[in-house]
Image 1 (cartoon, rainbow, N blue to C red):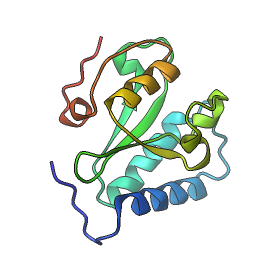
Image 2: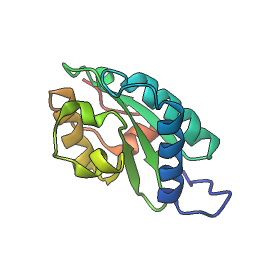
Image 3: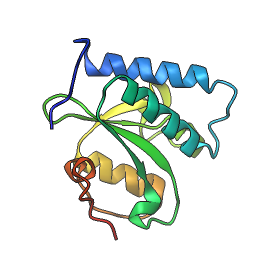
Image 4: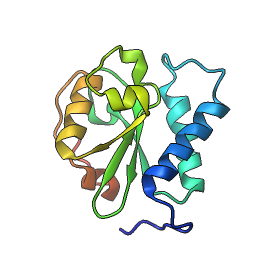
Length: 137
């Protein structure tokens, strides 16, 4: 699946713009317990920028703690995890998420992140998430 890059701008630049738009439009909303609002709004902004993206909900993996965040497919098998409500976890394991709101991930980082925020172990791959064939418990 190829990324449609209409304006020719780098993917990360477009992700930063999407994050800025979302944060501005939801500026009066706290990040505590609002992951579904943020991820849904961000998905619409990412769609408008023609970026291939998915919402991931830990409940879909039957993990004990429900949380929702976004994944973006970049160029050449690169993926980005965006979680604008990560701050609520008071965890510094992923400083990029605290400061920028996104980070580049591979399968191992994705699984580690699911384990951290979902409070349970699952093994999945980013390719499976985008193909719709996630291995869910």
